[in-house]
Image (cartoon, rainbow, N blue to C red; front, side, top):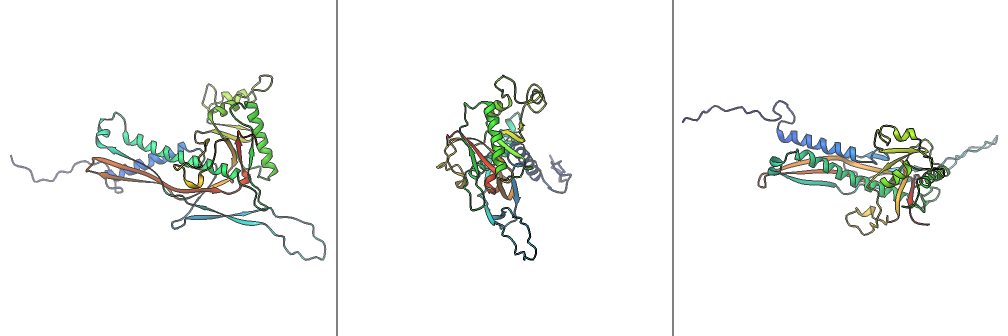
Length: 328
């Protein structure tokens, strides 16, 4: 049988576009988009603190800090010499590259009844989000533990909170935090955030007074997206403080935990939550989420890597309050 010398033109995934020009490039685009979407959906803290993107070649970024200016009455005939405004700088350095990686074998892809790559990429995005949120929460708690430095105030704590604390007592703690912020001149217009466990969140949401009446309006509980029958609560606002629940709040002694990046290691065994504003901490981002995919023909698998390059640090300690079970 004669073999035709005519070259065939098979249909290839992605052949109708100019960039990328092959199926591997399209796969990387899809994989990257799925990881980024999963990260954005999973992270709690990304939009609740300062994030600064820096250019290549920069390992750190310096944030200026200033204290209050003064005002005085002018005495006729006297010269204005200028009053001193306390200033300083805060340097936040970039951590090492955070990665999530896995291999997808051809046989798993072919035998699975679901889209393996899509599920793996979503899990990788969530993994990056977990570490990102944990480090931001650790930094917020470190900010709350920062002592005053000259004219610049330090952070603060609210003690005696724990598993036996009632919902009404948690609401009292929120009001106390707002008072502390006010006394430290934290701008009133800044949104306040609070992160606690799901158990504490439910205590606050269904808190009752001494007469058994709900402290949170019943209409709020039934509102779609705010809990109750019509929706599941993701956040709740009490006295201007937006409360979110998270599994990523540190609650153990991580002082010697080598799985935690060195500058975030501390003892969080008594930490039960935190309250902060966006100015409490900052993230310096050198590289947003990046993606790599490499074909290993010898192993019949695709090796996938999702990565990001960020670092976190304290900006204004007075904008952070640790909620702790410690008595003092």
